[in-house]
Length: 386
Ligand code: V47
Ligand code: SF4
Image (cartoon, rainbow, N blue to C red; front, side, top):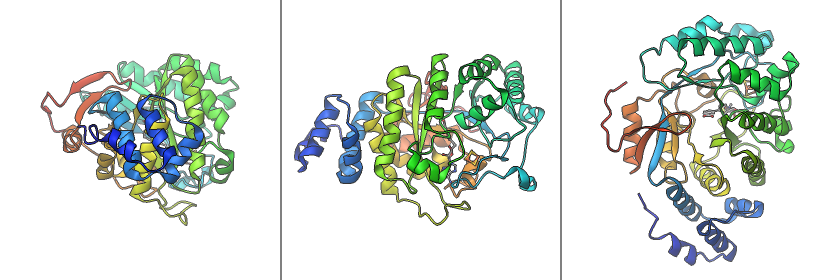
């Protein structure tokens, strides 16, 4: 699209703060930003400056290509042994009347309900139920693969996996091997929240810590699988906690190159134990996406998860470093609607997603989970309106 392309060098040259000018020059030279520079972008740079740089990087990496996939979600249970303060979704085991737990057959029936539909991925993530153990999920993975072998299974966060592995008394490496052999193809990005213990102990102290989260992703990458990473922003953290989080991810990515996508998740405050914490503005959202594009120089993709952010805001982020807009979710994904997300019952057809990306002046590309191009909708008409 190149809104900024011709003007970007002039924007940097005109910047009055010498440190920010240096950041701009480093971005052009493909030089890595330091921790201090990451914090400075959040604290000192104007949104237009950061946004212009992030857009430039986005266009260097992907041009106008904007990716989405066709997926569906399964949430095995909302019963959870943990009690993250931001979570509006989990129900304690003791309070099961408000909880649900699906059997393997029920989950397989959900998969079967997509028979004949052109979905390429199932995303499975939920609460940590004390009775849903490694054996249970191995059986689920095998059942799905037996029914539809080509469906990519992106499932389980390190929070769920850590619990399963410890209960099964297997190492992370052994547990990941078992899950992979049963059919697990990749990991979604959840459970990362904010890594730094100063914040983590306040918002989700009882679940897997930063080292544990990173260990599971490292073991995943070592098996040749890919994964995503998230960051929960806009609550009680400071800017430097966000940069610390991204720094840890950047370091692991240097080692393994296994991450595909970074997904900043905006904290929503409805019906949880942090309802007193106000939500941040759209300006903060744009900053978060833009700085992440600049800081995570070794992450191929930055995703705006539209059910959480709202489709119009997600569209806006396509000018602030974002090149992926998740998928055509067409179920009732409860984890967000319960926390007050923009989209109470997220659902968007391929035609709607394509139109949304085109309105932003970008090229809609349907991808599979691993970013192989399936259809370029800038040259192909949307064939159906499902
Ligand atoms: O880790 C929970 C977040 C995450 C709230 O990899 C909340 O493609 C905001 O990671 N406000 C799970 N966020 C979901 C997730 C995800 C989503 C979409 C795509 C992918 C991917 C991954 O949801 C949790 C937590 O950070 N979350 N409660 C809340 N109140
Ligand atoms: Fe459980 Fe996940 Fe909610 Fe934490 S965020 S309470 S681990 S469902």
